[in-house]
Amino acid sequence: MLKHNRTNVYDFNYHLVCVTKYRKEIFTSNQQRTAMKDILKRICEQRGIEIEHMEVMPEHIHLLISFPPLMAPASAVKAIKGVSARDWFKAYPETKQLLYGGHLWSPSYFMATAGNVSKQIVANYIETQMQRSARIK
Image (cartoon, rainbow, N blue to C red; front, side):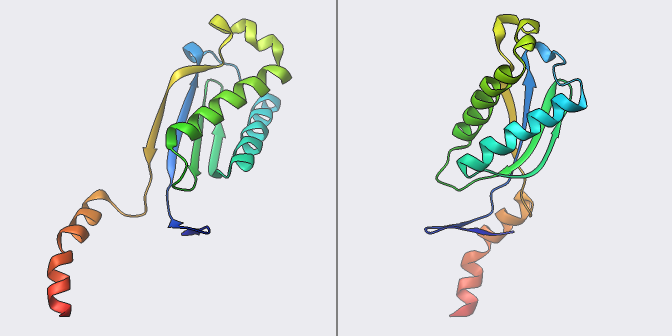
């Protein structure tokens, strides 16, 4: 679905996976998983990041997110991981002791684009533009 703002139209979708430090199982109860979902929803809402789908597992999270092209993917991840860790430890300070160095998230993450068409279709479209243009004239 195309998204519109004042200066652009876009359809960016990213699959983001963040893992807890050393894959430690932190979100072990339904209450904790719901709390993390609420934290993530609030952070994303405040920053103009749309959550299409979300799941919180005991030791990692999956998000399918979309945000305007002016926001860099790394900035979105930094906001999500940084603020969620701070808010999580405010709500569940006892979990900080379960994690080495008191960090909620591993410093790495996985992020991939998730589009409506394949890379091959886009490449073919680009490669045939000159041919299409010649036919129109």
